[in-house]
Amino acid sequence: MQYRIAVIKGDGIGPEIVTEAMLTLEKVGEKFGHTFDFQEVLAGGCSIDANGIPLTQETIDICKAADSVLLGAVGGPKWDGVPSDKRPEKALLGLRESLGLFANIRPAMMYRALADACPIKPEIIGEGFDIVVCRELTGDVYFGNHYRKESDCGWGEMGCDDMNYSVYEVERIARRAFEMARVRSKKVTSVDKSNVLETSRVWRETVTRVAEEYPDVTLNHMYVDNAAMQLVRNPGQFDVIVTGNLFGDILSDEASMITGSIGMLPSASIGETGRGMYEPIHGSAPDIAGKGIANPIATILSCAMMLRYSFGLTAEAAAIEAAVEKTLNDGCRTADIAHTGETVLTTSEMGANIRNNL
Image (cartoon, rainbow, N blue to C red; front, side, top):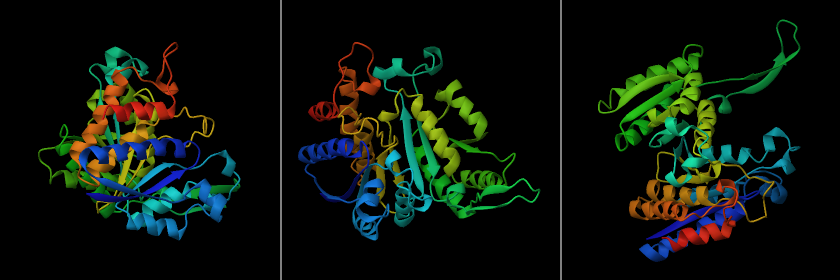
């Protein structure tokens, strides 16, 4: 089979880690008889430098024409002075909206080989954990109106951000979460703040109603502050977490850190069609950009998610995941997951070891 992939290497360490991911896909293609055609485009800070804006219509059109999108990272202190409506991160919001990507899927699991890197006590993590955070992407406060006005009580200027969710938006992300839970451990935890926010009351009512369509899946509700605590107190209790854009942004980062390294975790942003955008959850890490020491595993595992969710290539995805696990079991480490005295591999060396295990 032949697949077209739009590639956004982006800023910071993006070009280094995406290069390793592309080489891994090529190796998968050789092994399983597929062809992956890559077309590189600009988005983020590099697009600001080249085009004056973080996302061009050309990039959008190429991404829409592709079967899926592979993204490295965007942003960095170089563009801190850019007006807010033209910041590199606006490229991500624009791509998600243009491609109709409403669900962000972030797995967080603990590899046995990295158990000692987990900041949680061994007696708490037990046999480990395997969590998926299903975050709604196109609604909530990030897409509400943002404005300033004078305070009614004479306290000066105040910032205002509208938080909104429609029933339709909640229904579609809830169904995505329940469908995922059906092929996992059949448990969904819906996270909201319905004791305070009207938006969350709509969220909870809607998720509860959708749950009736999935009698084989257990649903429980949790306030976001309690969820944040429970993730470090007893992460093994979670299977699929479904939540809104703001809460999901925070909780997915928390879930990533209890695995031991944010450099290990992939993500998928998907919509109604098979097309998705796949990226590591970490940022552009400008402090180590160009040094060849970044961990490429999250980006490589994002490719595995692409193969599974967009292309339906389950065996190929499993091959990448098994290769990553074997590489870790062999003791291969980049700087972010290495202990004192352990041999530290470069970005390209880690990528080569994973490909050798395919």
